[in-house]
Amino acid sequence: MNIRKAINEPDTTGSSKLLCASFNQDQSCFAVGYENGFRVYNTDPMDLKVKRELGSNGGIGLIRMLYRTNYLALIGGGKNPRFPLNKAIIWDDLKTKDALNLNFYSPVLNIFLSRTRIVVVLNNKIYVHGFNSPPKNIAQYETFDNPLGIAALSPGAYQDQASNLQILAFPARVMGQIQIVDISSSGQERNLVSIIKAHKSKIRCLALNKAGTMLASASETGTIIRIHSTQTCSLLYEFRRGLDRAIIYSMEFSQNGTKLAVLSDKQTLHVFNITNNQQQVNKHHLLKNLPGLLRPNYFNSTWSFCSVHLKDEETDSDLDDRGVLGWSSESSIIILWKMKGKWEKYVIVEKDEVNSGGESFKKFELVREGWRSFGDLNE
Image (cartoon, rainbow, N blue to C red):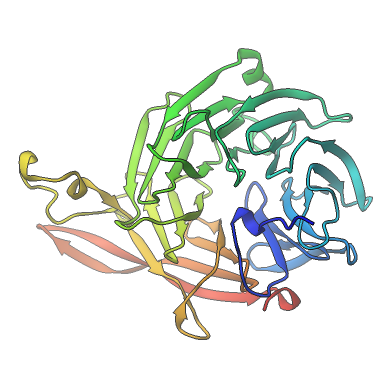
């Protein structure tokens, strides 16, 4: 019996029945899988929309939505998986049964949906299928060992038909490199494949903005976040999360792509500004302006413009949990906590104005606005 790791993370503890959680493409909804089925919620305000109990053998270890449609991707998991772990199910919730299924030679580690594509991630390979019946295999790519199923897919044309890019990003065959492909119809015709040399160590987390033009990445070291252009592969931004090694659990661009939220095992939530916004200014070291020969690279680092150390409000102690990030607005961040079975909302608020070096700028902070539990799915 194989127990799927919740939210693609190893060795979770605690008694939560929640096995996985993920947002839909515009983050207006999210879905959770558990030992007996799955549920779909409105993101903000949190509100239960769909509840499917699949019985004692109904474990769902991975779930993906297709916007607010009736289609979801389901992978078995937990103590008693609903489906074999090497099988990807496209579930039609109007008919409450599977509409499509794909079988593979090894366990499915991740899956993504778009209006026209189904992307399945295995340990050393990624398959791209057309979203039709039967699902035709369009392309496949080899990757570096990828036991966590790390990959990212931009939504592609759906509500905004002017956006034709449908970018798929995943670890390339060389450690620290990322492969970029456009899997839209026009992209497949051009057969364009790009490689980004992003990090020196293994890729740990990836995120694409909604337009598919920017890719954020973090390595297993977890100290530096880099953002590259998916068109030119050039480095656009480099941010420092911290000095100590960390595991990046989740990264997510805001809806307009103006900010990037980053969550790590240090239980700190960082938000970086990705525009020339003169109010929300990312922080820099006080010694940044030292003469070049005397200035270590560390002093050149760009830090988040606001951050918060996350604590359990009930015990006032550090959280020992793994979260999934989403944005409900340009200033509101939602965290889905697996072990605590909890939904939390943090908002970016202006604190005061600070004067430094003759210049004045506004200071911002992240404030916990509310939380709700998943009821019988929490501890």
